[in-house]
Image (tube, rainbow, N blue to C red; front, side):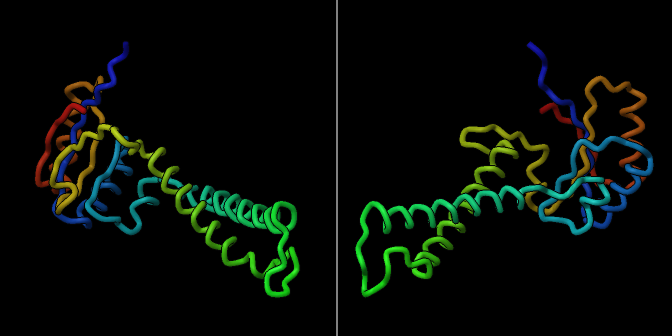
Length: 176
């Protein structure tokens, strides 16, 4: 059985500008950042960290297309094969009357599919235990975390000096 524990050294910052400066310095010093945490999204952080754009919108399009095809196909089947009734002089296959329900099912399938996909990718399914580094990260602190499993004392000291040089208000260690 392998050890899944992560030893993490993290620094807390008081301001998002300090955090951005520290991330840029970490990238220029070729330090491998485990993750960056903030209480709100920071514009421009993803490109600085070298993260690619999310592909969740592609999944949303696919789920929406499935919903539209399901809604339109189901109504076509119901009104032409299963229960063909003429309502108010309309033909059996009245495409314009199918549009509102097709639109609603497109939105429903896309939204529910994207939520389930997002929760699955992020590991936020019911009963999942997600440990936090510091409770203040959801309130007013910003954080850069480095994984230190197997790191030498010299490497950990280098990371501590990085935090002090970039203006971290606190530096802590935690095992997740």
